[in-house]
Image (tube, rainbow, N blue to C red; front, side, top):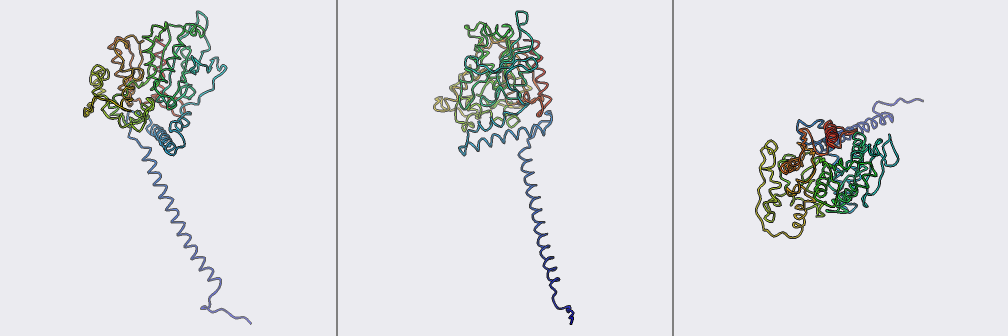
Length: 449
């Protein structure tokens, strides 16, 4: 009744077990292959990201990794912006603006009073400005200092509402018991030179009117003009024009320029050569900002990077001497660098090359090109420069030219500084050099304004 299976007789259970073992072995092999593939992809991505982020930095700069990450983030923004523009989705500057608005500390809204300080967004001669009024002051015995401030950003980025600038202006107003006016000048590419300059000049003239100063309880003998980077450019240019404009009765008493950009003729100075790939402002990036400001196609930036403009036959020797760094820079900043040679071309300038050259020679765009007579009438100055900044030599040359013109200049050079450090003095992008820079800036204004 019962029949035992022989050992040669295949069992369904054994067959199932064999098939299961076979399938498990195949699945295990597939899992192993998938894991290996994931490891390889992860490794390649890690190497790629590390390669993208890594930038050789001098030992003097603190917190290498944080600065490299910031620089990589900004470069990524630029490249995403370029891609969006190539695809016809948006202008690359529009993309970058949206990405950089929150850099630094979060800004605060204007309106009302916080801690006794009044912050309001108003217009000065149709130019939007943000006015910070300190808690104390008012009346003849309470006349206060004042600072007109222009933000940086390559004449294309930045805003008065950007966190780092809003925090700085609040700090100035509070510590100095000063009325601070931060100017919301129009930006490229929507407008180009000289609109940015004209906005800043119009706001300055309006602010310097005796009636406006009186309404804000400002001492007309204690008004400063200041700015960083492209804002330093605008501050220097406005200070020059106000100093020679006899229709303006109240003049700025001091000018405070933070790593200002002052010329675009020679992007081969020692600092441009030394720091061409240094965070946070690369040499090629500065060339693109100049072309945006002048309203010229930014694809022509290789032309601006060549030495041809500095030595172009159409530039007279008298103008070329205004930025001859072999005579204007201290030896320790010239280091081993030599002037970049060039082939002398035709004296005729046509087309976009002529548009670029005429803009770069205009003192409203390039304050370093001003004559000594104009420089000699400008107010005493505070100029900040950073060792690891392409704009270092612009500030150093301007310091020398102002001093030669008889202007008292306090030059503050940071051996461990990099471009934009002033904006990185607060969480989450804190650098000690940024905090020291703000402290030195405040202390100088406290003593000299």
